[in-house]
Image (cartoon, rainbow, N blue to C red):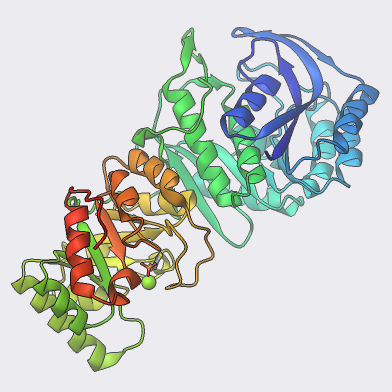
Length: 490
Ligand code: TZP
Ligand code: MG
C-alpha cells in the first residue's frame, strides 16, 4: 500500500483537519500517517481555541515516521505559526515525496487558524512554496497570497500566475462562481497548460472539511501514481459526493460527508479551457454493439455484409483526393446498409459528406471545431484513457465515451497502462447517462467479461482484422454483444 502523510491540525469536531485527511486517504486505499501541528478546540459554531504543538513535538513526529513510513505524497494543511512553517521547510526538503500544500488560514466558520499577523505569516508561507507540487488556495487565500482582490475569471488567472511566480510548481485556485449557473469552478495551471475544473452547483454553504478533503484526496491520488490532472479530477469527485450528501448545521455551515469515490453521474466534473462558452450536448448513441475500427473501404464492405451496424473508419496514411474518395464511398455504403459510420480525425470531410459521426482523440480536441460538428448534426465519440480525459470529454457531452485500453494492446503505442474491467465497470456507472465504448486488447477470450460490465459498445481492431476466419469471429462478436453470452468460443 502506498503511504501518504498529512501534516495538519486536529479538528475536535472531526469534520476537517487530520480526521478528514486520514478518512480521505483510507477511502482512496492509501495508508495514512499523521503529523499533528495543533489541537484546535472547535465545533460547527466556530473555533474556541488553537493550541499549537511545539516545534520539537512536530519534529519528533516527522523523525519517527521518516525511515519506516516514508511517504509517496504529503498533504500539508494548517500550520498555525511562522515557526512551524519554517520547521516544516527544514524537515521536508530532503524527503522525496509529492507535496500538496493547502494554505489554511481561516476555518469555514470564519475564525483565524494562524497565530501571526497575516502579512508575516504569508511571507513565511511563500518560502515554503518551492517545495509544493501543488498549492490549493481558495479565493480568499489566493487573494491574501497575492495581496489583491479577486473578482473575475481574469483575476483568478492572474492570481494563479503570480502564485506560480512564488515558486509552486502548480496551483489550483478553488471555489470560483463566475458563469454557467454557478458551478464550483476551480482553475489549475502549471504555467504552460491550464484548465477549469467545474462541478455541479450544490447549495452555497461553507462545507466544513471540503478544503481538507480536496487536498488530501489529491495527495492520496498522487501517492497512487495518478497524474496531477487525474488527481484533481478524482479529488473533485470526492468533494462533490461529500457536498451532495452533507449534513447541515444551521443555515450556512454543512459538514461534508466523508466517503469513497462516487459512482453518481452528478459527481463527475468537467474539464474545460473556457467557462464562458455555452454548453452543448451531442445526440446520444445507445446500442452500439460490436464496433470494429478499420482502415479501408474493403473492410467496411466485408463488415456491412456480415450485418455489422456500427463501424469506425480510421485512416492514418492517406491524404488529399484518395482520402476524400475513400471517406465519401464509405459514407455512401454505410448509408445503404443503414449502419452508423464514424470517421476518425477527418471531421471536415465527415461533415462535407454527411457521415453519421466523427471520432476524435484527446489531442484532436485542441484543433477540431467541435461546435461545427455539433451544428452539422453529426454524432461525436471521444477517446479517453484516464479520469482527466473523461472529465475533459464530459465538457462536450459526446454521443459516446470510448474508454481504454482495457487490456494490453499491440495495435497502438499506449502511454496508459491497461485499465481492466473493474475501472471500466466503475466508469460505466459514473457515465450512466452516456454511452460507453470499451476498446483496447479485446478479443474472443475476454469479450464476455467486457460485455458483462454493461457497456454499450465493444470496439476492436486486431481481433477482427488479424483473425484467421474474420467472418466467423465477427458473427461470434455480434452474438456476444447482442446480449447472448455463449460460453463457447468461435
Ligand atoms: N485506442 C485505445 S486502444 C486502441 C485504440 C485505437 C487500439 C485497439 O486495438 P486492438 O487491436 O483492438 O487492441
Ligand atoms: Mg485522432
